[in-house]
Length: 384
Image (cartoon, rainbow, N blue to C red):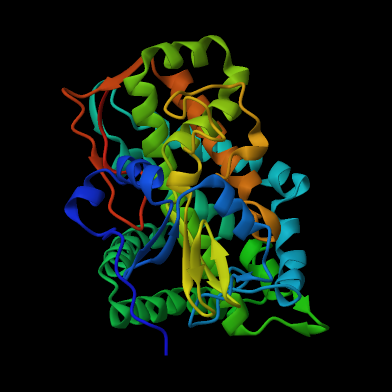
């Protein structure tokens, strides 16, 4: 039995939650590998995070108590599912989805007021994420509001550490996906969309089970709804607060992709991922025992001044290989091409449809609470 550890910090305090980014910056400077009962070992330095990402033998991704395809799998099991998944995000797949993606982005932006205030998270971020993900999966618009409510309840239960509530929410979401599968099985000719195609995939010579399909689709959808929504809020607030960058983006539209990645390095839309130590190991001078959990804090590692000089500044001359926005190693996000395309099209539509975006009043934006990144509310003024 391991000796109980003393907490180095409490990630759930109001002080931390009021501004997670600032709190992680402060923590990284004096305790870069920090223990807490809530997150166990938090890794805040870029070098420590990269070590973990590149060593999936010592630091296992199998950190979930439930089936999680392929997020909580290690090679070789993980490798087979990645082979199935990656074609859904290759160039051909992105080219096929591109017109629909652009149309949705332009449609969401078109709802902005011609001259007035808008709450960017609800009106833009959440709506865009819901519409784009349902379109990508081939799901009906009637799921937008139920999914919006589910994400809110899931984030609250995660922050509270309420395992019972999380279990019920997982079953609820599973029911939504199982209904999508059942609808297609009742059809003589189901639509040729991502959901139908996944239903015909095989692994090791056998069809995917419903449990595997549900887990895979849940991971895609939950991840997309949370991070794309947060990313839209972060990008819109940044452009509103930095008129010089807003103008430069209008004058130099080719910088859009690099600028978005750098904005999201500065202010993380996804705060963390988990790993589990498979053996005793030392990280940053701290001994971590077999079976203990590590929490990768992207919102800290991507602001490490050892890797990103002037980390608070947006700079387009940084080496993109260091940016961990989409992770690294064997578990690097397979959906990165889709996410980048969505954010580029949204930002392009936003710049084309508006003449000015600025903060509403004294920047009353409200930071999101862990595990969410970005903001809960981003009130802005828009002029078209």
